[in-house]
Image (cartoon, rainbow, N blue to C red):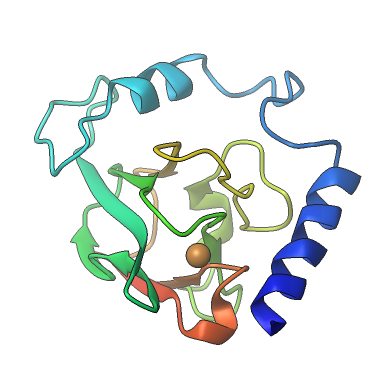
Length: 162
Ligand SMILES: [Cu+2]
């Protein structure tokens, strides 16, 4: 029951933000994000990204009664991309803890169409994807993140930039 009301509350927030999805406003984003997202393979693809960095896939899913990122702990390099897939149990999002990322890292995390600082929009469509790009200048260290709708249920993860 608590979960239901939480999700409802988030839906309101989302609605208040203008229904979210594709705001044309985020001018700085190259059009390739959606194309790349659409082209992303469903399972662990090793497809070479156009951007030069490697691409890592993370599923967001409900397994039994557990909401989780899979894998929940990955290691990447600065310049890489992490593609989050809404597999089941959504809506999900990706939100970094401002105090649990390396200092000075905020500007190195590129998140299109954010609904807040370091917060992706909610993914509501099954199989929707969201790509987070780490700048080549991203500081090394651990970047902890969580899913806003399922934070209380322990849905969180960590990206280590090496
Ligand atoms: Cu979630």
